[in-house]
Image (tube, rainbow, N blue to C red; front, side, top):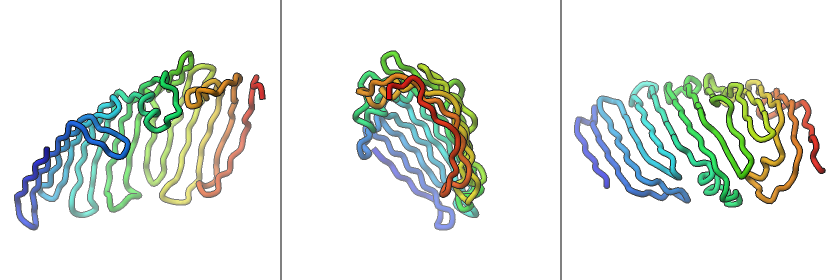
Length: 231
């Protein structure tokens, strides 16, 4: 169902929109329920959305001024993400026994007309995958920030079956700044079975890598070693 109401003047229009649907199909994805409230009043737009997909609950809201530099604020919260079902919808080859959960919170604020002044952040407090006896997940919340045209990933750690990997980095998007990234630790080759069930190999990959330079011309250095692998 949908409703639309308008009021106000040409210089100061008012508009209220409500959309509700029990099920909505967008491409290959199905939203299990959708409620959207949006409005415009006093040169300011706002929206509030609630939905669900693949077992996850989705909430998003935001506001924006309709004059000046279009100062805006928006947030999204996605809880109870079922990673097995989500990956199966994207990659049909993943095994049916694959399970796992994730949670994501994001925000964005700043003037839409001045993208270099936009700031945002994403926090993933929970991220884990499991397949038979294999497990991997984040040891602490994953946190990424966008500020000044640069995406920065704070140091995070993934731990699991024979795996302990630390990653951090910074990637300039709005200008030709320097790329900075490191990846250190070990990854169990058995984890390849999560995406490729027929993979049957033991051993580890041990990493000690750094990346510098620019996104167009990266300079990658370090070592990658196979340990106790049969090939």
